[in-house]
Image (cartoon, rainbow, N blue to C red; front, side, top):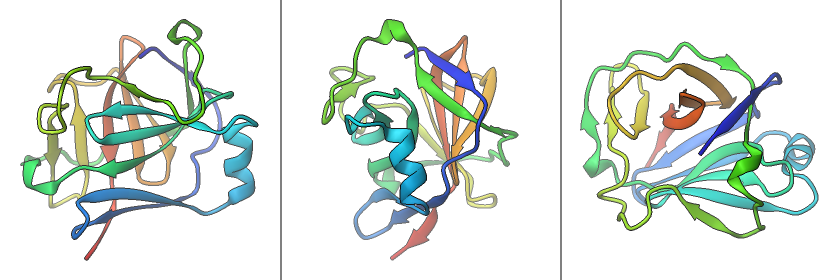
Amino acid sequence: MILLQGSGTALSGRLLYSESEYSFRYIVADRTDMTGRVGPDGVASLSIGTLQVEVGATTRQLLFVWGMHPRQNWITSPLGTPDARPGRLTAGPREGEFVAGEARDLGPGTSWTAAWPTRFDPDSGWLRVSQDESADDDLTQIADGIVVGRLAGSLHSLWLHPEFTA
């Protein structure tokens, strides 16, 4: 998935991980800001297993992460804190149109257990969901607690810093 980088601020809110539900959710701080980023046609998703990256169907802007992602499959590994700049990422025009309600699978034919591996650093609280272990070319903070890594202009990783809840 080719992503175009633009200037702007990260979406304000809170990324939560529910231990009992094995899932992430995002609570948006400013609904007006969110509405402007989504556009008039609603949202679609990019799927990595059962983990979803919400995308404005019209604006093509990556918004936040949500979805089931069981912690039992995370690999404990030192990561540190990603050095990211706030900004906006949009899906490139060659990726085709997005339809509200659509979930576009980035790993066709793979289950959530076979999707991109997840590494978690308990010391920093960051986790990295990535295609492989190679370094990202650049990192963009699209929302509070959510950083997207690109490699050769394509989506390569998600860096997540959630608040853990029971």
